[in-house]
Length: 323
Image (cartoon, rainbow, N blue to C red; front, side, top):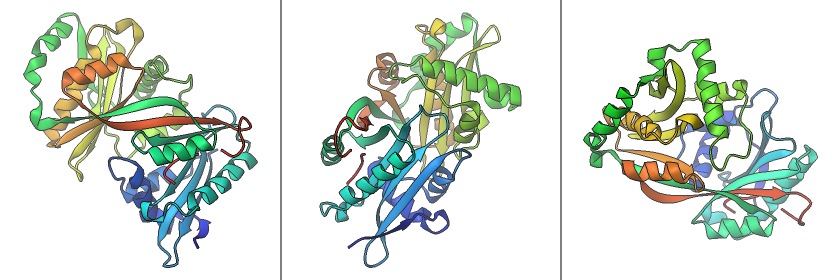
């Protein structure tokens, strides 16, 4: 029978990284787990670990609400390592997680499962979750990439007056941090699949400027007449010899000119210069234009994630994840 206790980041980060990595295509590091689970000001977060008779972590449940989220909305995650599934542990942990979320004012629960993980999806649906969004993963092998195909695109955009530069070249000042935030916010809120919320500057700072992957030279910006009109951000992970395109966005009035493609091209060239083997990214299934950009660049589709939502009270019993 499993035993439970509150997660202690000082001693449990390795278990958290290992267990979370069962649910994603790329394993996360202990450093990433420490960053993710460091409590932010105003955040509500409760995480409980499950252990077997040998005191090895075999699962956890996690309830989280950040200050910028919609009222009553919480993230919830239940993960059981594959060898321990099928014995009721996921159900037990889910019930505890839902109870704690409810005690903290939850009215809506958000979660995610892999789109190939049929058992976890069934687990979530049985508890009242519905698919809200479908995000696609895709991957670009750097060895197969030929940037010369895009010489005409870059020449045209530069002739039209667009300029491309990094945040490092612009200067990592407070003013430019706010400009980058506003560009992310405006482009992000106008993206297909957005639910009308975006982190405030304080949360964005924690999630981006203070993130372990952040580098000012990998934040690529497009400008027109000194106005910042588009961006693409990439995280480089040299220890794993890979990169991840975090976000690419262009202001609505400048779309349809090839800017997103040109911005992503710059991040790919950065990744190539860093010597990584491949770049990953993800996109909402509703964002057909960005999916088309990825195909033109040579990204190949991979299994993705279902983003799930449960409205508490609509059904009896109700998260998600790999149980």
